[in-house]
Amino acid sequence: ITVLEADGRVLGFSGDLGRPDAPIIRDSDVPPALDLLLMETTYGDRRHESYENGTRSLATTIVETVRRGGKVLIPSFAIGRAQDIVYVLGQQRARGAVPTVPTYVDSPMAVDATEIYRVHAECFDEQTQAQLERHDPFGFKELRYVRAVEESKALNDLADPFIVIATSGMAESGRILHHLRQHIGDHRSSLLIVSFQAAHTLGRKLADGVSPVRIFGEPFDVRLQVHTLPAFSAHADADELWDWVRRLPTVGQVLCVHGEQRQSQVFAERLAAHGYTAQVPERGELLTV
Image (tube, rainbow, N blue to C red; front, side):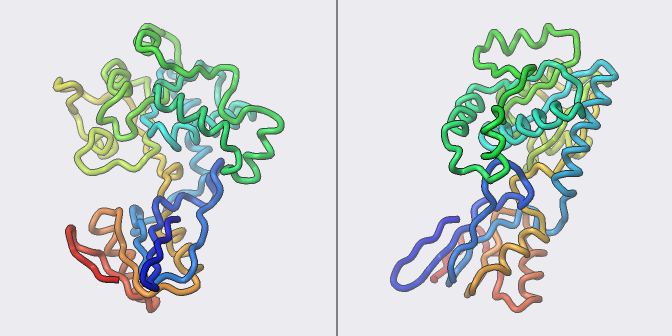
């Protein structure tokens, strides 16, 4: 949480609050008394399934896809989401909940970010720190981190099922596009949406069931199965946002930002109903604290 103080006034910015039951990184801090809070409201109008249920859904989808002989494609942000998914896959593999198929993190940036994670265990929650004493939370036998372009391209030649985690998280760029082009027409394969998808992105179109879609300018019919798993979002849901804001000692005004208009407005109205001064600012609006 970012807190700025000037001229006796205190401004706070929530950033992405995350989910309280998510692994690896410690839960969000609660700032001191604020005169103005800029608060993310990405999911201000809805509830996520629990992280535990999301993990089960992930495992079930992988089991079903591998049974069909398909590939599992997971578009992911390089920092945060890729590490979360690797962590969860490692846990599920240790429990025997997912098949032991080859798994690839196909993103040089995600590879670099994972190395940074490994040297900053002070940011981890207690559960992850405890696991560090027993094993690497970002590694397991079937996992390979892919840097080289040639190695990434070689994945296209694999006939047997595998899991690939690749950037970008909204499927607008990066190596995930090459994997999608290769497998989007395969009804046996699955695309797992584990991140927020902004309007008009390829990821959003796929999540909304649009077909055909364009990849590298060419139209492709969508035959692979698309599954949306919002439990893995870095954005708290409406109830989690409310639980966080009501822990603040005091706050003069709340600006609901980082959300589409409906999500932000619904949450601002919820705050107002509980006595908070809250609004959704207009783009470019100038405010005096």
